[in-house]
Length: 85
Image 1: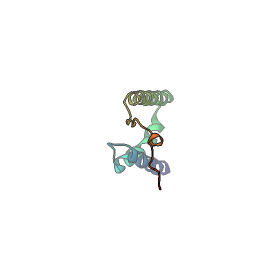
Image 2: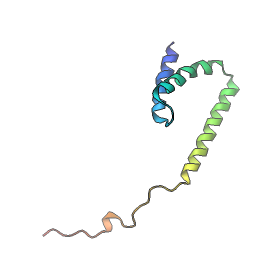
Image 3: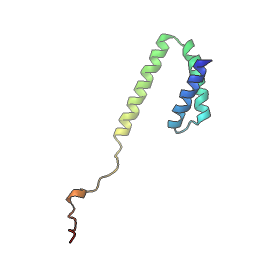
Image 4: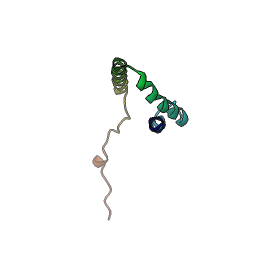
C-alpha cells in the first residue's frame, strides 16, 4: 500500500514535467510501476534501463543540433553610453 502511494506521488510529480500526461494519469502510472517492477526479471529491468538511457542520449543529440536563441551582434558593454552632465 505504501509503495503505491509513493509511486502515485512520484508519478504525479513527473507528470507535471511531461507535456502529454496529466496529473491523475501520472499518478495512475506511478501507482502501477511498483506492481510491474515486482514481477519483472532482472534482465528485463536492465534492458529497460539501457533502452531508456539510449533514448535519452538520442533525444539529447537531436536537440543539440537545433539552433538556440540568436545573440545580438553588439554587446551591451560595447555600445557607447551618453555621459550625464
